[in-house]
Image (cartoon, rainbow, N blue to C red; front, side):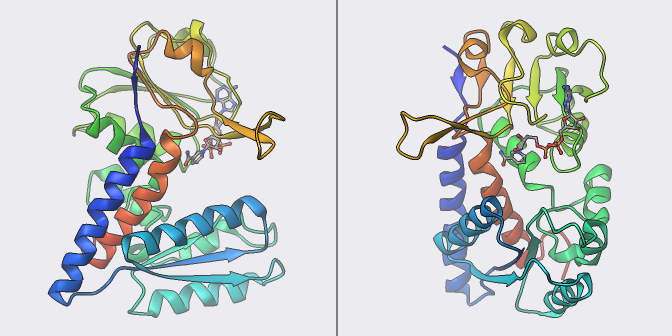
Length: 295
Ligand code: NAD
């Protein structure tokens, strides 16, 4: 049986650690971390994600502010809201839930967020700092994966890590983090994407396989080396009449057959997903304590 990398339990542990630090801050009379989230429109999935983030803030004792804007808000108005939060000394971290409506430029909005408050780690300043190995807010999902590898003592040094998917929020930063001179890190990394030739053959050479392409159950057992560590980032809802909710969640990996070959694997749900919010909270704590950018 492979080691089941339990992101749910690990994220709860991290939240407990953060809550502990918040009570120390309260005792010391310090500043309680405060996260602001901007939600534009009424997309169901975005509302669920933002709701979960705000609820987690309450769970660890943070303050939170949710700014809801109509789908029709202009780009200029949204930029003004971002700027107001940038200038508000009480707010430590700011996230703008994506996707944004088509008439708003994600580039302009991301570029407007003050790097010191960019706890999603999406601004050029933080991506650049991460790439240089400087203190930075690292994007929540890759950061959560690094934390799982660390807490499960998975040896990464000298290993071949294959990342499938090169998005700016998962695959690309993941490849940089796994190649850096640090622990976890020091891997030889192959970053693969939709134009990669012979993907199954490349995937099969991975000691650590990180899958983030967004295709349900894409990775089958014949693409995985015996004893590999497999991290499944994908999340897909599929209809399932046997469930009360009418659906169940699956990942980018065929879990049962790949688990039979892997030495360690993340499940879906309960693997990478819960770590994303834990990382966001951790980044917000770092922001409040001035640990990345000296205040
Ligand atoms: P994306 O669509 O932005 O990027 C997908 C990447 O996969 C692209 O770089 C593309 O080149 C590559 N790709 C597509 N088809 C491919 C193929 N056939 N072979 C090789 N590469 C291929 O996706 P994303 O935002 O990185 O998300 C990926 C998955 O992870 C999605 O299922 C998403 O829901 C999930 N996700 C989960 C979390 C979490 O918290 N667990 C966070 C972010 C994303």
